[in-house]
Length: 59
Image 1 (cartoon, rainbow, N blue to C red):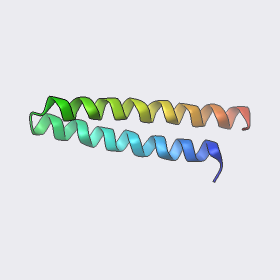
Image 2: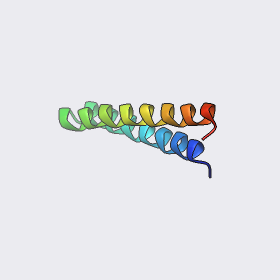
Image 3: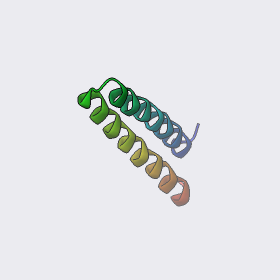
């Protein structure tokens, strides 16, 4: 698997995982879990963008 594809896949995984944590934190009234979810979602977005940039640059 190319590095760019791998980054995009892992980024998507982190986004989904983060969204689940965020929703679970809201439902359980756990602000720490909600914040972790938001952070993981952002990490996923950044990693996906890195994968997209690598794909454009051909690395």
